[in-house]
Amino acid sequence: MTDAAKRLCGPPRRALGDVLAKETVPLDGGLSGQLRAQGCDLSDALWSARLLADAPQQIEAAHAAYVRAGARVLITASYQATFEGFGRRGIGRERAAELMADSVALARRAASGAGHEVWVAASVGPYGAMLADGSEYRGRYGRTVRELERFHRPRVEALAEAAPDVLALETVPDTDEAEALLRAVRGCGVPVWLSYTVAGERTRAGQPLEEAFGLVTGEDQVVAVGVNCCDPADADRAVEVAAAVTGKPVVVYPNSGEAWDAAARGWTGHGTFDPRRAGAWRRAGARLVGGCCRVGPSDIRELAAALAASGEENAW
Picture 1 (cartoon, rainbow, N blue to C red):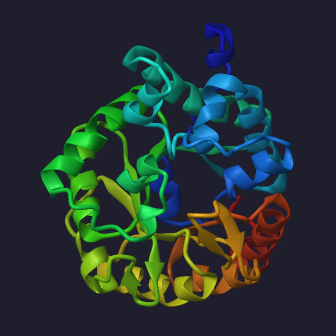
Picture 2: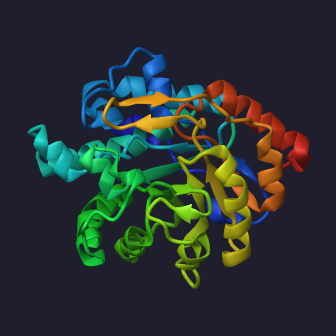
């Protein structure tokens, strides 16, 4: 991306945290699903992050599809972008940092023609995403909080340098990693949201949600807390707990309701994502609402309409 193009893709006028104090903002859906719909091969261990190097125009097109569907926040293709993962493909640290920055610039460019404010959230995926073995849905990697902090800090710094509107600390499976991430972002100068992946009323590692959400108490850098990449039914209760425990705006973006088979690298079961749930989530305290894996632009279009119908007609 040229310097001239980057200058055309500046950030929104208002800080996202300020907006969440009074509005509910629709997020995008699953980036990988849209990339597959565009014909992209995501079988590599780097998943969608590979396309930052090999086909960045596909990433921009996927973001643009969500902007057209009504998304007001775009989550970057950096979920699986790590120095370690890029290194295994022979990509050095300097180039890897450039690719992480490109993930922010591509989302900015996709948002530039929207005609309204669109915020960019730089995805910071969990340690398990780098392992590419499904362990982000288990947690408890056998790493200490300090070790996880050391892993996350360099990529946090690289993404923060690209000036996103917010860092999305997402698909976090346990409180150890949440603590490590909160340590890693301190001093980076960018607000964050923290979202766990959960099963029932516990994190994937088994901690009660009250304990997990309680970690953000007193963390002013955290502008929203909640859940993502979970069953839509589990999101219902999680939104209520997050709002009650923290008093902060809640972020919620579950997957389709299907289950990920890490060995087969495919999805099983039936989709249960219903965009009409968005109104109930908003009433329970959700201020960032979207979808994760297998939730596409058509779902986000319906979700944005459901939010509008539930009382936000004049908010955007």
